[in-house]
Length: 354
Image 1 (cartoon, rainbow, N blue to C red):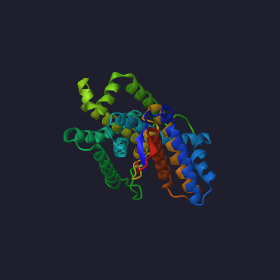
Image 2 (image 1 turned 180 degrees about the horizontal axis):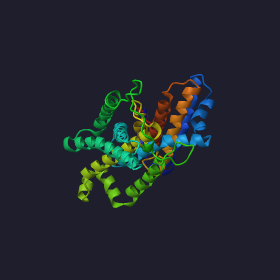
Image 3 (image 1 turned 90 degrees about the vertical axis):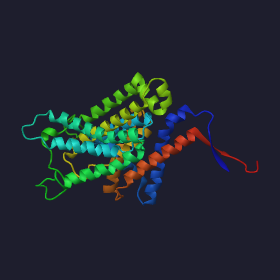
Image 4 (image 1 turned 90 degrees about the horizontal axis):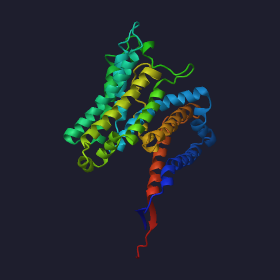
Protein backbone atom coordinates (compact mmCIF):
# COMPACT_ATOMS: atom_id res chain seq x y z
CA UNK A 1 0.00 0.00 0.00
CA UNK A 2 1.09 3.59 -0.58
CA UNK A 3 1.82 5.81 2.39
CA UNK A 4 2.54 9.54 2.48
CA UNK A 5 5.38 10.37 4.85
CA UNK A 6 7.33 13.52 5.56
CA UNK A 7 10.72 13.84 3.94
CA UNK A 8 13.67 14.00 6.36
CA UNK A 9 14.66 17.33 4.85
CA UNK A 10 12.63 19.26 2.30
CA UNK A 11 14.56 20.57 -0.70
CA UNK A 12 15.05 24.34 -0.62
CA UNK A 13 15.54 24.43 -4.38
CA UNK A 14 12.30 22.61 -5.15
CA UNK A 15 10.51 24.73 -2.58
CA UNK A 16 11.24 27.81 -4.68
CA UNK A 17 10.88 25.98 -8.01
CA UNK A 18 7.49 24.55 -7.10
CA UNK A 19 5.45 27.47 -8.58
CA UNK A 20 7.35 27.18 -11.89
CA UNK A 21 6.71 23.43 -12.00
CA UNK A 22 3.05 24.09 -11.16
CA UNK A 23 2.80 26.50 -14.10
CA UNK A 24 4.36 23.92 -16.40
CA UNK A 25 1.83 21.30 -15.27
CA UNK A 26 -0.98 23.83 -15.77
CA UNK A 27 0.15 24.38 -19.35
CA UNK A 28 0.28 20.63 -20.02
CA UNK A 29 -3.22 20.10 -18.65
CA UNK A 30 -4.37 23.16 -20.60
CA UNK A 31 -3.06 21.63 -23.84
CA UNK A 32 -4.98 18.42 -23.11
CA UNK A 33 -8.09 20.47 -22.31
CA UNK A 34 -7.94 22.40 -25.59
CA UNK A 35 -7.52 19.17 -27.53
CA UNK A 36 -10.47 17.57 -25.71
CA UNK A 37 -12.60 20.59 -26.63
CA UNK A 38 -11.58 20.30 -30.29
CA UNK A 39 -9.53 23.52 -30.27
CA UNK A 40 -6.01 24.12 -31.56
CA UNK A 41 -3.83 23.94 -28.40
CA UNK A 42 -1.17 26.22 -29.89
CA UNK A 43 -3.80 28.83 -30.68
CA UNK A 44 -5.28 28.37 -27.22
CA UNK A 45 -1.97 28.88 -25.44
CA UNK A 46 -1.33 31.88 -27.66
CA UNK A 47 -4.47 33.51 -26.23
CA UNK A 48 -3.12 33.13 -22.69
CA UNK A 49 0.62 33.67 -23.01
CA UNK A 50 1.29 35.72 -26.17
CA UNK A 51 -1.67 37.97 -26.90
CA UNK A 52 -1.51 39.72 -23.47
CA UNK A 53 2.12 40.80 -24.07
CA UNK A 54 2.43 41.25 -27.81
CA UNK A 55 2.04 45.04 -27.94
CA UNK A 56 2.32 48.18 -25.86
CA UNK A 57 -1.45 48.41 -25.53
CA UNK A 58 -1.69 44.74 -24.53
CA UNK A 59 0.95 45.23 -21.84
CA UNK A 60 -1.01 48.22 -20.54
CA UNK A 61 -4.16 46.14 -20.24
CA UNK A 62 -2.14 43.44 -18.50
CA UNK A 63 -1.02 45.98 -15.90
CA UNK A 64 -4.60 47.22 -15.49
CA UNK A 65 -5.66 43.69 -14.52
CA UNK A 66 -2.57 43.02 -12.41
CA UNK A 67 -2.90 46.15 -10.27
CA UNK A 68 -5.97 45.18 -8.17
CA UNK A 69 -4.75 41.58 -7.93
CA UNK A 70 -1.39 42.69 -6.53
CA UNK A 71 -2.87 45.24 -4.11
CA UNK A 72 -5.30 42.70 -2.66
CA UNK A 73 -2.69 39.91 -2.56
CA UNK A 74 -0.27 42.08 -0.58
CA UNK A 75 -2.89 42.59 2.13
CA UNK A 76 -3.72 38.90 2.15
CA UNK A 77 -0.02 38.10 2.41
CA UNK A 78 0.16 40.02 5.70
CA UNK A 79 -2.92 38.13 6.90
CA UNK A 80 -1.71 34.66 5.99
CA UNK A 81 1.77 35.22 7.36
CA UNK A 82 0.02 36.16 10.62
CA UNK A 83 -2.05 32.93 10.51
CA UNK A 84 -5.26 34.91 10.01
CA UNK A 85 -7.41 33.41 7.25
CA UNK A 86 -9.22 36.20 5.49
CA UNK A 87 -11.15 34.60 2.62
CA UNK A 88 -13.50 37.54 2.13
CA UNK A 89 -11.28 40.05 0.35
CA UNK A 90 -13.85 40.09 -2.46
CA UNK A 91 -16.43 41.56 -0.10
CA UNK A 92 -13.95 44.13 1.20
CA UNK A 93 -13.13 45.00 -2.42
CA UNK A 94 -16.85 45.56 -3.14
CA UNK A 95 -17.47 47.69 -0.04
CA UNK A 96 -14.35 49.73 -0.81
CA UNK A 97 -15.72 50.29 -4.31
CA UNK A 98 -19.11 51.31 -2.89
CA UNK A 99 -17.55 53.78 -0.43
CA UNK A 100 -15.31 55.23 -3.13
CA UNK A 101 -18.24 55.41 -5.56
CA UNK A 102 -20.31 57.28 -2.97
CA UNK A 103 -17.63 59.95 -2.69
CA UNK A 104 -17.20 60.11 -6.48
CA UNK A 105 -20.93 60.74 -6.89
CA UNK A 106 -20.58 63.89 -4.76
CA UNK A 107 -18.22 65.47 -7.30
CA UNK A 108 -19.54 68.27 -9.48
CA UNK A 109 -18.26 70.45 -12.28
CA UNK A 110 -16.37 72.71 -9.87
CA UNK A 111 -14.76 69.96 -7.78
CA UNK A 112 -10.98 69.98 -7.66
CA UNK A 113 -8.59 67.07 -8.20
CA UNK A 114 -8.30 66.60 -4.43
CA UNK A 115 -11.40 64.43 -4.75
CA UNK A 116 -9.18 61.59 -6.03
CA UNK A 117 -7.44 61.36 -2.66
CA UNK A 118 -10.81 61.40 -0.89
CA UNK A 119 -12.04 58.58 -3.15
CA UNK A 120 -9.02 56.39 -2.40
CA UNK A 121 -9.26 57.13 1.33
CA UNK A 122 -12.96 56.25 1.30
CA UNK A 123 -12.15 52.96 -0.40
CA UNK A 124 -9.51 52.11 2.20
CA UNK A 125 -11.83 52.97 5.11
CA UNK A 126 -14.68 51.00 3.54
CA UNK A 127 -12.55 47.89 3.21
CA UNK A 128 -11.17 48.30 6.73
CA UNK A 129 -14.65 48.67 8.15
CA UNK A 130 -15.78 45.44 6.46
CA UNK A 131 -12.73 43.47 7.61
CA UNK A 132 -13.07 45.09 11.03
CA UNK A 133 -16.37 43.27 11.43
CA UNK A 134 -14.50 40.00 10.96
CA UNK A 135 -11.85 41.02 13.49
CA UNK A 136 -14.50 42.07 16.01
CA UNK A 137 -16.41 38.80 15.78
CA UNK A 138 -13.21 36.76 15.99
CA UNK A 139 -11.84 38.81 18.89
CA UNK A 140 -14.99 39.06 21.01
CA UNK A 141 -16.85 35.86 20.15
CA UNK A 142 -14.10 33.61 18.75
CA UNK A 143 -16.06 33.32 15.49
CA UNK A 144 -14.27 31.55 12.64
CA UNK A 145 -12.81 34.26 10.42
CA UNK A 146 -12.92 32.00 7.35
CA UNK A 147 -16.70 31.61 7.51
CA UNK A 148 -17.44 35.15 8.66
CA UNK A 149 -15.30 36.83 6.00
CA UNK A 150 -16.69 34.57 3.28
CA UNK A 151 -20.33 35.13 4.24
CA UNK A 152 -19.80 38.89 4.33
CA UNK A 153 -18.93 38.72 0.63
CA UNK A 154 -22.57 37.96 -0.14
CA UNK A 155 -23.75 40.76 2.15
CA UNK A 156 -21.47 43.18 0.30
CA UNK A 157 -22.84 42.02 -3.06
CA UNK A 158 -26.40 42.57 -1.82
CA UNK A 159 -25.49 46.05 -0.57
CA UNK A 160 -24.08 46.96 -3.98
CA UNK A 161 -27.16 45.58 -5.77
CA UNK A 162 -29.49 47.53 -3.47
CA UNK A 163 -27.71 50.80 -4.21
CA UNK A 164 -27.43 50.45 -8.00
CA UNK A 165 -30.99 49.14 -8.34
CA UNK A 166 -32.32 51.67 -5.84
CA UNK A 167 -31.20 55.04 -4.44
CA UNK A 168 -28.03 55.45 -6.53
CA UNK A 169 -29.58 54.34 -9.81
CA UNK A 170 -29.00 56.77 -12.67
CA UNK A 171 -32.39 58.31 -13.53
CA UNK A 172 -31.12 58.96 -17.07
CA UNK A 173 -29.68 55.47 -17.46
CA UNK A 174 -32.59 53.89 -19.38
CA UNK A 175 -33.47 51.78 -16.32
CA UNK A 176 -30.11 49.99 -16.28
CA UNK A 177 -28.87 49.10 -12.78
CA UNK A 178 -25.97 51.52 -12.61
CA UNK A 179 -24.98 54.86 -11.18
CA UNK A 180 -24.31 57.83 -13.38
CA UNK A 181 -20.87 58.01 -14.93
CA UNK A 182 -18.49 59.73 -12.55
CA UNK A 183 -17.18 63.19 -13.39
CA UNK A 184 -13.87 63.31 -15.25
CA UNK A 185 -12.24 64.99 -12.23
CA UNK A 186 -12.67 61.77 -10.22
CA UNK A 187 -10.62 59.70 -12.67
CA UNK A 188 -7.52 58.11 -11.16
CA UNK A 189 -4.56 59.78 -12.95
CA UNK A 190 -3.07 57.71 -15.75
CA UNK A 191 0.64 57.13 -16.15
CA UNK A 192 0.79 57.73 -19.88
CA UNK A 193 -1.36 58.63 -22.83
CA UNK A 194 -2.70 55.82 -24.97
CA UNK A 195 -2.92 53.43 -22.04
CA UNK A 196 -5.38 52.83 -19.21
CA UNK A 197 -2.60 52.14 -16.70
CA UNK A 198 -3.08 54.43 -13.70
CA UNK A 199 -0.98 55.53 -10.76
CA UNK A 200 -2.54 52.57 -8.98
CA UNK A 201 0.27 50.49 -10.48
CA UNK A 202 2.86 52.66 -8.73
CA UNK A 203 0.90 52.39 -5.48
CA UNK A 204 0.85 48.60 -5.83
CA UNK A 205 4.63 48.42 -6.39
CA UNK A 206 5.22 50.82 -3.50
CA UNK A 207 2.99 48.59 -1.37
CA UNK A 208 5.12 45.58 -2.28
CA UNK A 209 8.26 47.40 -1.15
CA UNK A 210 6.57 48.57 2.04
CA UNK A 211 5.38 45.05 2.85
CA UNK A 212 8.90 43.66 2.38
CA UNK A 213 10.39 46.26 4.71
CA UNK A 214 7.66 45.79 7.33
CA UNK A 215 7.69 41.99 7.44
CA UNK A 216 11.40 41.30 7.03
CA UNK A 217 13.21 44.39 8.29
CA UNK A 218 11.25 45.64 11.31
CA UNK A 219 10.62 44.36 14.81
CA UNK A 220 6.90 45.10 14.38
CA UNK A 221 6.76 42.84 11.34
CA UNK A 222 8.47 40.04 13.24
CA UNK A 223 6.04 40.51 16.14
CA UNK A 224 3.15 40.45 13.68
CA UNK A 225 4.13 37.04 12.33
CA UNK A 226 4.94 35.55 15.73
CA UNK A 227 1.69 36.89 17.21
CA UNK A 228 -0.32 34.98 14.61
CA UNK A 229 1.71 31.78 14.38
CA UNK A 230 2.48 31.22 18.06
CA UNK A 231 0.24 33.26 20.39
CA UNK A 232 1.69 31.68 23.54
CA UNK A 233 5.26 32.45 22.46
CA UNK A 234 4.18 35.95 21.47
CA UNK A 235 2.70 36.60 24.92
CA UNK A 236 5.88 35.31 26.56
CA UNK A 237 7.93 37.70 24.40
CA UNK A 238 5.58 40.60 25.17
CA UNK A 239 3.85 40.61 21.77
CA UNK A 240 0.09 40.83 21.44
CA UNK A 241 -1.67 38.13 19.39
CA UNK A 242 -4.84 40.25 19.61
CA UNK A 243 -3.04 43.18 18.03
CA UNK A 244 -1.71 40.87 15.32
CA UNK A 245 -5.27 39.78 14.51
CA UNK A 246 -6.61 43.32 14.20
CA UNK A 247 -3.63 44.65 12.28
CA UNK A 248 -3.66 41.77 9.79
CA UNK A 249 -7.37 42.10 9.02
CA UNK A 250 -7.38 45.89 8.88
CA UNK A 251 -4.38 45.97 6.54
CA UNK A 252 -5.92 43.27 4.36
CA UNK A 253 -9.30 44.98 4.26
CA UNK A 254 -7.77 48.39 3.57
CA UNK A 255 -5.75 46.99 0.66
CA UNK A 256 -8.82 45.31 -0.84
CA UNK A 257 -10.84 48.51 -0.37
CA UNK A 258 -8.13 50.54 -2.10
CA UNK A 259 -8.22 48.09 -5.01
CA UNK A 260 -11.98 48.61 -5.22
CA UNK A 261 -11.54 52.38 -5.29
CA UNK A 262 -8.88 52.19 -8.00
CA UNK A 263 -11.19 50.00 -10.08
CA UNK A 264 -14.39 52.08 -9.93
CA UNK A 265 -12.60 55.42 -10.25
CA UNK A 266 -10.35 54.01 -12.94
CA UNK A 267 -11.37 51.53 -15.66
CA UNK A 268 -15.07 51.30 -14.68
CA UNK A 269 -15.96 54.94 -14.03
CA UNK A 270 -19.26 54.01 -12.32
CA UNK A 271 -20.87 51.46 -10.03
CA UNK A 272 -22.67 48.52 -11.62
CA UNK A 273 -23.66 45.02 -10.39
CA UNK A 274 -20.59 43.75 -12.25
CA UNK A 275 -18.05 45.41 -9.95
CA UNK A 276 -17.36 42.02 -8.27
CA UNK A 277 -14.94 40.52 -10.80
CA UNK A 278 -13.53 37.76 -8.60
CA UNK A 279 -10.30 39.67 -7.89
CA UNK A 280 -10.61 39.01 -4.16
CA UNK A 281 -10.69 35.25 -4.68
CA UNK A 282 -8.06 35.21 -7.44
CA UNK A 283 -5.74 37.22 -5.18
CA UNK A 284 -5.64 34.25 -2.79
CA UNK A 285 -4.02 32.22 -5.57
CA UNK A 286 -1.73 35.16 -6.37
CA UNK A 287 -0.57 35.28 -2.74
CA UNK A 288 0.21 31.58 -2.57
CA UNK A 289 1.79 31.26 -6.01
CA UNK A 290 3.96 34.22 -4.95
CA UNK A 291 4.94 32.32 -1.79
CA UNK A 292 3.49 35.10 0.41
CA UNK A 293 6.52 37.19 -0.57
CA UNK A 294 5.98 40.64 -2.12
CA UNK A 295 8.43 40.04 -4.99
CA UNK A 296 6.86 36.69 -5.81
CA UNK A 297 3.40 38.23 -5.70
CA UNK A 298 4.36 40.85 -8.30
CA UNK A 299 5.13 38.08 -10.80
CA UNK A 300 2.16 35.92 -9.85
CA UNK A 301 -0.19 38.92 -10.22
CA UNK A 302 1.05 39.39 -13.78
CA UNK A 303 0.55 35.67 -14.46
CA UNK A 304 -2.99 35.73 -13.07
CA UNK A 305 -3.88 38.80 -15.12
CA UNK A 306 -2.68 36.89 -18.20
CA UNK A 307 -5.22 34.21 -17.31
CA UNK A 308 -7.96 36.83 -17.06
CA UNK A 309 -7.14 38.39 -20.43
CA UNK A 310 -6.48 35.02 -22.06
CA UNK A 311 -9.84 33.74 -20.86
CA UNK A 312 -11.62 36.76 -22.36
CA UNK A 313 -9.80 36.33 -25.68
CA UNK A 314 -10.46 32.57 -25.74
CA UNK A 315 -14.14 33.30 -25.19
CA UNK A 316 -14.41 35.83 -28.02
CA UNK A 317 -12.03 34.26 -30.56
CA UNK A 318 -12.22 30.52 -29.89
CA UNK A 319 -15.80 30.26 -28.68
CA UNK A 320 -14.82 28.82 -25.32
CA UNK A 321 -16.98 29.46 -22.23
CA UNK A 322 -16.17 32.31 -19.85
CA UNK A 323 -15.40 29.78 -17.13
CA UNK A 324 -12.13 28.88 -18.89
CA UNK A 325 -10.45 31.64 -16.83
CA UNK A 326 -11.52 30.00 -13.59
CA UNK A 327 -10.44 26.62 -14.91
CA UNK A 328 -6.88 27.82 -15.50
CA UNK A 329 -6.80 29.56 -12.12
CA UNK A 330 -7.98 26.39 -10.41
CA UNK A 331 -5.49 24.26 -12.33
CA UNK A 332 -2.64 26.49 -11.21
CA UNK A 333 -3.67 26.34 -7.55
CA UNK A 334 -4.27 22.58 -7.64
CA UNK A 335 -0.91 21.99 -9.33
CA UNK A 336 0.85 24.19 -6.78
CA UNK A 337 -0.73 22.33 -3.86
CA UNK A 338 0.25 19.00 -5.41
CA UNK A 339 3.83 20.13 -6.02
CA UNK A 340 4.17 21.56 -2.51
CA UNK A 341 2.88 18.31 -1.04
CA UNK A 342 5.41 16.23 -2.96
CA UNK A 343 8.22 18.63 -2.02
CA UNK A 344 7.48 18.17 1.69
CA UNK A 345 6.29 14.54 1.57
CA UNK A 346 7.09 11.40 -0.37
CA UNK A 347 5.14 8.32 -1.34
CA UNK A 348 6.41 5.01 -0.01
CA UNK A 349 5.17 1.56 -0.91
CA UNK A 350 4.58 -0.53 2.21
CA UNK A 351 4.23 -4.28 2.02
CA UNK A 352 1.11 -5.29 3.97
CA UNK A 353 2.69 -8.63 4.79
CA UNK A 354 5.33 -6.93 6.92
